[in-house]
Image 1 (cartoon, helix red, strand yellow):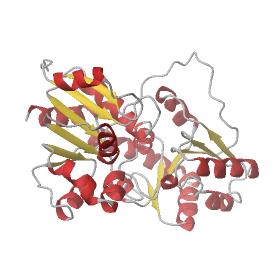
Image 2 (cartoon, rainbow, N blue to C red; image 1 turned 180 degrees about the horizontal axis):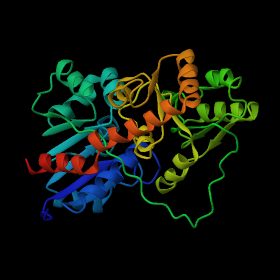
Image 3 (cartoon, rainbow, N blue to C red; image 1 turned 30 degrees about the horizontal axis):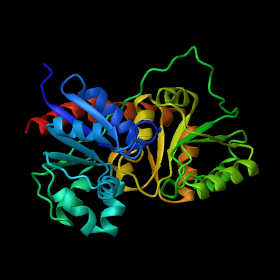
Image 4 (spheres, one colour; image 1 turned 90 degrees about the vertical axis):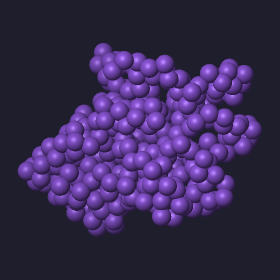
Length: 336
C-alpha cells in the first residue's frame, strides 16, 4: 500500500516506560508508519511545549489512547482539540474512570469521530450504558508486537526451579500480583521446586512493599523490575506457563504475547481475559484460589493438555490478533 500524506498525532500516556499503553503505542506506530505520517506524543512523560503545539497544528487527525488520563492532562494544560480525533480505550478507563465520573469523561467520547475498543463487551457497554452510536464505536482487537532481542547481551538474572511460572504485570492494586501465592503454596505438594517470577514496573509503593516482603518470605517467589520490551521474549522462552491475576483487564498484551510464542496461559475471569481465552480450549480461566490451583496442576501434569493449549493459543493469535488486520482497521478509520 502506498504511503498517504495523512499526518496523525498519536497521544499516548506512556511510550518509554514498559507498560501496556506504551506497548500499544509502539505497536501502532510500527504498523502505521509505512502508511501514514505518525508522530507520537507521550503526554505523561514529556512536557507540553511549543513544539507539541506546532505538531498539533500540522496534524490532520489526533489519535488518543486512554481517555481518562488524557482528559486529566488536557484539563491541566488547557489543551483544546480542533481537529477530528479518534479515541482508543484499553478498557480500564471504561471499567473504572467512566463509571466513577461520567460527566468528566463522556464529553470527549461524544465528540470523537470514532471510539475503538478491544472487545465486543466494551462496545456494548459504551452503546447501552453511555448512549454512544453503534456507528461510532468500533472493535479492533490488539495484535502482538515483540521486537527481536539481541541474544549477545548478558542474559537476564532468571531464577532456578521448575516448573517455572511467569506473571508479567506492573505493580498496582488492580493487577493483584500476589493473589497466586495461596494456590502455589498448595501446588508445592505436587511440584516442590515450583517457582514464580513477577515482572513489572514499580507503579505503587504499597504494592511494591508487599511484593518485597513476600519475596523475603518465600524462596520460590522472585521479582524483576521492568525490562525493555525487546527482552520480554527471553522471559517467555524461559517460562513454562504465564498467568494473569488482574481484577480487570482491557485486553492483556502479556497473554497475547505468550500465546504467540506457544506458551499456555491461565487467567482470572474478567471481561478482557474472557475476550481472549476460551476455557479448556486455548487457555484456562479461574475465579478463585481452588480453580487456579487445579488449572495449573492440570496443565503442568498432562503433556497432551499442555501441548493442546500451546497450539490452540497460537492459532488464536493467527486468526484474531495479527498486526496486519489491526493496522488496516485503523487506516480505514483514518481515511473515513
